[in-house]
Image 1 (tube, rainbow, N blue to C red):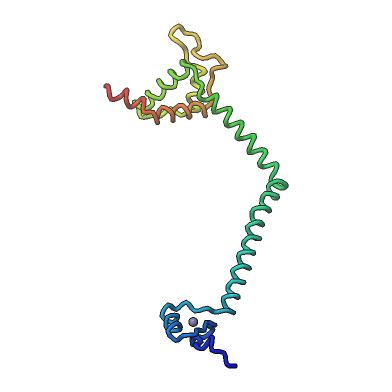
Image 2: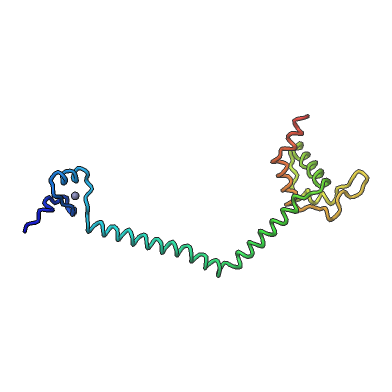
Length: 171
Ligand SMILES: [Zn+2]
């Protein structure tokens, strides 16, 4: 018995579609959605394989560095942690200047602005040890000496706040 069910086979090379009616084939050709059975399987296989290998690579790139950091870079990460902690604690100290310290640094900063000779933080922390109050006593005791980093930090704080510029505009 001759099979009449799939009379019209799509002429597109590789397409496995066949149709009982010619109009269906025409429609299929119009739409152009050819079905490449073998190739589509191959493409699917390739897609699956590349997806699988991507998964493996993804897993690999996620897993291996973690293991590497855990083993080889543990001392580094520990020291950077403690450094971060040290920086944090010192920056906390840095923000807590006494009124006396802030006044002095603001004065020095203003003078630097007005004279155009910016005081260097290292010179400021040296001069803090020499500067005296009106009554002749040391303005700062040894516990109030600031580091040049603290001075620089406060200067940048002043510069960002434009405290001094506001004062200057009053002249
Ligand atoms: Zn086709």
